[in-house]
Image 1 (cartoon, rainbow, N blue to C red):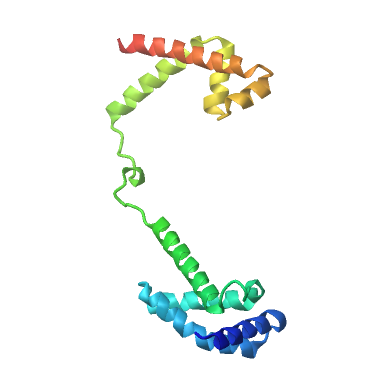
Image 2: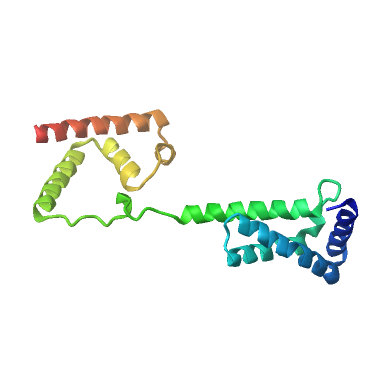
Length: 186
């Protein structure tokens, strides 16, 4: 592209920015759309994807031509940079949607057998009994942290206790629960 053509395209872009000149836009569209599409297709986009992206790029030109600065780059450079960035965004979005169907986290849980249900119920009863043996302050801290989902800071604020006290009570409660559960196992 020679200097004269650059100045001409810059003037057309200015006409689009200042006056919403449809004829200027049409000239720019006719010149750049096929070149952008070809460039995108050489970067492994299908014809349909490339056409869609070219439409987006040209809409950017129509709505944001005032952002183009002819002193910093040619209109061609500006449009191809937009095309490059939009293509990268599309690839990132496409990659974000790809997931591994065999990922264990995406598999439904296995059916639980009757024996496992009984073992779980027994364990739950032991834990409930152990929690019931805790002092009320420790039991309240555990309930707030694990059943209500409050952070240690939220518990401290709600109870008016220092944060260190809240953490200590929760740590003591865990220690006592661990001892009870180890005795039940042993």
